[in-house]
Amino acid sequence: IPPCPPRPDFDASREKLQKLGEGEGTMTREEFTKMKQELEA
Image (cartoon, rainbow, N blue to C red):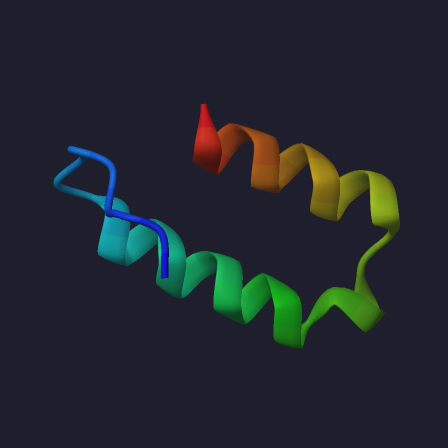
């Protein structure tokens, strides 16, 4: 497990990423990548 970045919303972002991962089949790869980049930015 990588160290948590110093961001207070990291847990929320990780939760979103997990939900995105579960729903990835319903979104396009572009949408998934874009949202992931926005969360990691």
